[in-house]
Length: 72
Image (cartoon, rainbow, N blue to C red):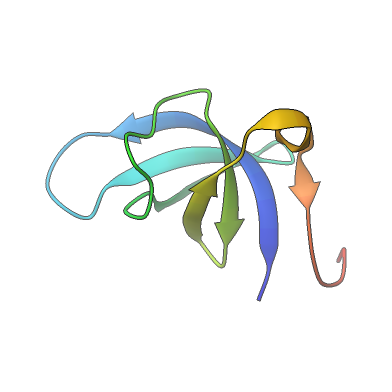
């Protein structure tokens, strides 16, 4: 399991599944946003293996990058 902090850059409208562009350590990835409630650009999120699993608030929201496992 790989956990990353990222920032929502864009949310794609359209049919399910709900997808969005997330910036993680400067890299943009398209991932599933189905587990989030009303995601919008600028939200900080926790990403697990290509799925945004929750919004992040408070001081931890300023961090970006790797959370668990090996940094490579």
